[in-house]
Image 1: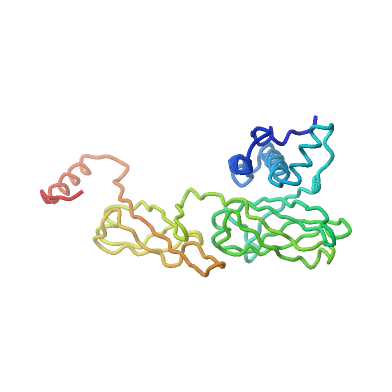
Image 2: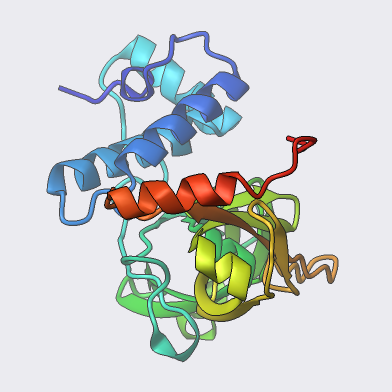
Length: 288
């Protein structure tokens, strides 16, 4: 039985372009291989979602698909069967995030008097979006042979952005590679506000009172930060230019780390006595 692309995305036949996009993003986040490592069922589902979205998000392809559905068996749409996977690669050959970054290549049709354009839709991790870097994918050259192509993603790439690059080893007739950023996956460690990042760091009461050097997670990995003596709980430290770097407007955001004091996990009469003693040191006019 032929796949029903509307059913695949869970939208009605009269769904708007915005509804189709929202449905795709919701399903892509659920089945993205980065979030389901080693799950072949999710990988296949992700492919089906991408294929459906590639057709229904393009007005011309959607019109052709709707006409084909109403007249009988659906003929292959331009680009069907050219779906390929490849691992994402960062600077120095290191992978991005916690696993391989998967994406797909979708081939556009021949326009009058121009070469076919290869359209690559990407879902980036937050680290990839913030820092950019090289991603390796597999595309077909002029003879139909698979070729590994490295694409440079600029830092600060946002959902909805698109740009073109060329791959010399695909041949002149293959035309440019059109990159579209469909979405950026959230990172549970950080909250993004514009070009700035925010995160919480659990610290002990002695670290706040006496000061300490502690490790904090950033997009670039663990970094050592200094907590000054007698720092208050909830105070925020700024990590300069550790936020989002945008090559589009030159902005370099910061990373703000909020210090969250925590009590020892193990209860004891000694701890209770110490906490009561600390409590007695607060003034009667303590401001919350």
